[in-house]
Length: 600
Image (cartoon, rainbow, N blue to C red):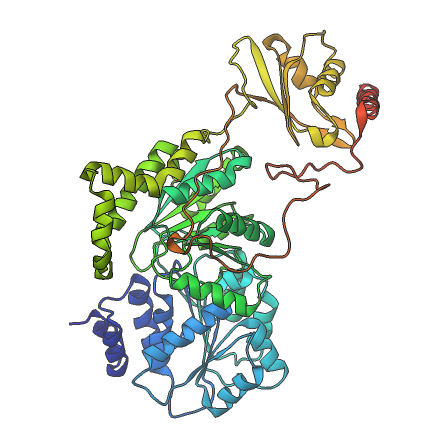
């Protein structure tokens, strides 16, 4: 007996469910469907992405709609075109044995006139994005004044995307006596505001805890120096040869840059962000769904509503600005009862965010070490061996075998295996033999451990006009130390390191408390002594799994001469022109010291 029968669904929906192969309802379906079928009520349902929310509201909606009446009886709002189309297609599948019921998708990027014609022909359910729905109402192309049901799907995502005013405006055109069903993964204050303003004593259904992450997703983080973020990403990809992932960046620019670098390095990757045309976006998503692309690099906004099965990993190349956004990111994997992994590449300055996320999702992160070259080579060799094992023999090769056998007849089985794997694997192996350890460092490059000295981090560097000599002179003057009082000075693009004797620690920290240089506060911190790291990860062989392919590179590039961004991605933050030559450096240093002394 199909367990959906126990929920009170009618025979036509049960038949459609059987055709789709569903046997048991998910937890959110089990909790919501009986209530929505039996009662005329408002509802707030909190459940993670991928738990079956569309069916949770779709089944009751189809059963309650009158298919004989052509007027619009239900409106479903969703954040993106992608999700809008997905919901519409699922509703068509659910209602396949109700031929008179017509859901219509209304979204931007398509003809608004054609969508209006579809509604005019009879659309009992409209599935719409907020922006396009606003246009339809403004142009009087649709009438939602008599709807009986309004569904806000992925409500938190719609509000995160800035649709609050659109939603409130749309809801103002609907009757007060309608039933509103709000489905959301998290419950930020904006969602609570919508519920309070437009709903009447809603029943609340929670699957898991509010804002809690999916229990099917494991969470892990990898601590690296900021400059090694991309190298770390490549190592994570190389350790998981069958990876099918979404990689999240904070900005469109970083998204494009990371995708381009991956493509150049032979990975099957593509970017998804707001600067792509709708056609480009459709091509990228089609390739991702068909697994021509293994690594989709996306912004949070562009990834809204992506519903692709079997995503194995979510990789947070950069953590989001809003902690709650992490819940949406990790929800892209571990769907429909399957397991997934959410990885975070994090620098030391971001570790506090991990703790904040743990509190939100009520799950702990595992700190993992990035694999070294030996581990990666082992994984890749075994993966290649399994690929060979599982490859179907193409007997078209048979006619060529005599000549091949003649060429190889002098080699034993073991020698042939070694040669074959060497052909396929030498580039990988050689690269990782030369690659450096990516363990994070605190104290700069090649610092000898010295228990009698203290090493410091300082947030000025070459971009501020310093070399090691001028910075050493600056520090000696500022700290009033002797000739050898400052040593092991290491100047990077936007930061530096230096050492003093342990006995001078208090003096250093006191001197740089509230210290300004060229209008910016100087930050000096004690750091640990350790060796530096480097390396950029392995390189995949071009041509495998679509490697080297991808979708057109953007015309804009990152970096460039004269930019105030350092190699490790940090903005220098200094305004004004950089000083040139030792004379101007000396004058800047002298003026800074004078300002410091005048404050005292």
